Amino acid sequence: MTDPVRPPFDPELAAALSVINENVPPSLTPDMIPAVRRQRAEALPGRVPADLTLGGAFTEEPHTAPGPEGAPEVPLIAWRPTGVPSPTGVLYWIHGGGMVLGTHRGEEIPLLLEYARELGAALVSVDYRLAPENPHPAPVEDCYAGLVWVTENAEKLGVDPDRVVVGGASAGGGLAAATALLARDRGGPRPVGQLLLYPMLDDRNDTVSAHQMAGVGLWDRVSNQTGWGALLGEAAGGPDVPPYAAPARAEDLSGLPPAFLDVGSAETFRDEVVEFASRLWRAGGSAELHVWPGGFHGFDGFAPQAALSRSAAAQRLPWLRRVMGT
Image (tube, rainbow, N blue to C red; front, side, top):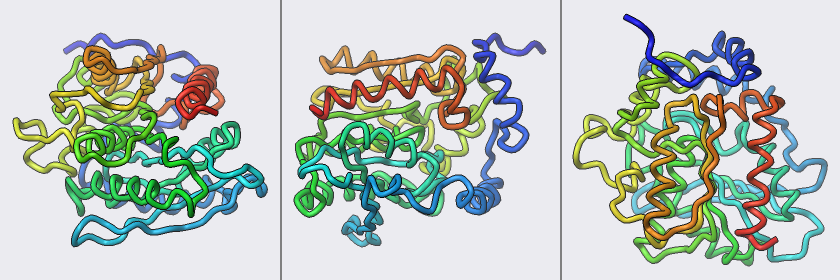
């Protein structure tokens, strides 16, 4: 049996991926989740500085938001720029990890703080409950509860409730899109934008790109099945999955905040991200879409010094400036 035809990896990224795959295989199966969580927790102190104030450029404060009814409180961390008059814009961030991994003080934060410093903005990161221990709707309800708390406590945080961007990467990008849908449908906070970095949007896991990237890269079709199965159980891929779990299921994408979407051409999520952007346009919305040629899933985080990674990172700031009005 011949391998499926697939887009090539960027040569510089392909070299990095061969090293990355020695420790991070393309496929994550359910039985691997506990060990991967332990490995990531052990490695985190070496990958994330203990001091995340960027040498005093930010203050860092933990907070908790009331959780959904009957659920625990939702932990948050707020970083506010020092010496910047209130109120500032704020990026409300939802971490990645395939719905089963990650923390709100993880590897994504240092780069986000660099963005925030450039923007003179604040950063708030939410720690939602993880699947499979906490299946849908726990993760998205935690994210929504945190967003409501941020807007209701904007004065205390020194931020402008009318300049909130909700964002996330991978699973966090999918949760950010779902949070924006919840906010629209519940008449809740109205973010000015949604920053969706290679977001995890569609539980059906049956696009051309999902099949092309099976067994290669990072977060392949098997991993995707693991993540969605943890979140949705046997309902994953079936007819009754709600849009607040998988935003690609939403029938109506009108009335949503302007979106920035990016994705690699050589990753599982490529086709669902392109389709989601197209549907936003068809619904009369605003979307900026970047498809990075030869990029694997999360390439900018795993290989930040690669030329393609630097190009991708550079495109986000201009969009954030426009939507935040900075």
